[in-house]
Structures are given as structure tokens and as C-alpha cells.
Length: 174
Image (tube, rainbow, N blue to C red; front, side, top):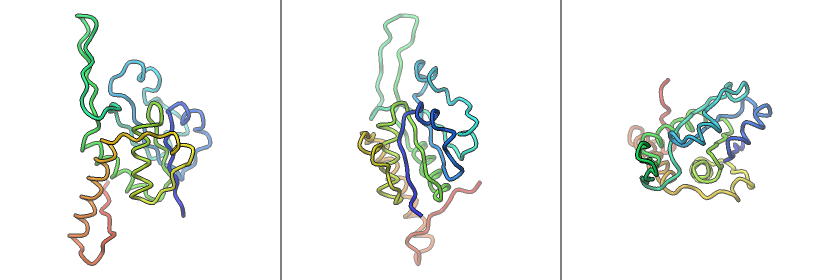
């Protein structure tokens, strides 16, 4: 069965939630403590989406840490943090645990962070990446590299534990 992935903005996921079936898993990424983003989609409750296997993470769409100086003395400077190895592990483990499902990935715009995850799904897990979504994507290079590095480490560990099987994947235990 061909599995498909979509990278979309949060409002698209919310708007089409009633069309989503149990054959889907959902990865939702939002900005870390960004006031506008948190007002827009604070990982809010949704009667359809909340029934899916879901991974919700927070990290910024940057390649390296960025400091945005405050314009006011009483407001602290803001740091934007890129994705890290722990988050990449969570994403890959979630994907492996839901390998029988189509995957919806959302971030603020559905272009960079979600694009990196869909690129990983297509190139390393055999998913079909929706053509419209793919055409609009500009994958976050840092996140993509972290996903591939962790995935390759996971594959190497599984192969060394069972050298007769080269495609075994170790799934996380619940």
C-alpha cells in the first residue's frame, strides 16, 4: 500500500480535519514561545485530529540559533532555536511506530520544517509526497540532516544486532 505525506500550514489541517481518517498520523510543529504563533494555533483541541496518533513539538524554523534583540528594556531578547537531535529522534521514532499510516505534517506555513520531514519520508521511508505540497516546499536543511543521521544510526544499530537482516527497524517500546 502506497503511503502519502502532506506538509501543510496548521490552518489547512484544522480546516480539513473532518476529512481525516484513522489511516493518518499527525506531526504538528509550532514556534517555540512565539506569541503570534501561539495565538494562531496553540496545539488546540480538535475533535477529529485528537483521535489520531499525534506528535506535537516546538522549535523554530532556523538553521542555527538566532538572537533577536528586544526593542524595549523590560522585554528580554528572544532566542530562536533550531531543531535538535532529541527532536529528530522523536520524529523518526514516531514515523517508525506509525509506518502503516499516511502522515500529515504541519508547521506555521507548511513549507520548511514540515517540508524537511516529508522529504525524509519520501527519500528514506518510501512515502509518496503530495505533488502540490512538494512543489511549495523549501525543506529546513538542519532538520533534514538530523532526521537522516538519526535514522541511519538506528538502521546501523539494528543491522549490527541482527547481521542476517539488513532492513530490520527497532521500534520504540511503549
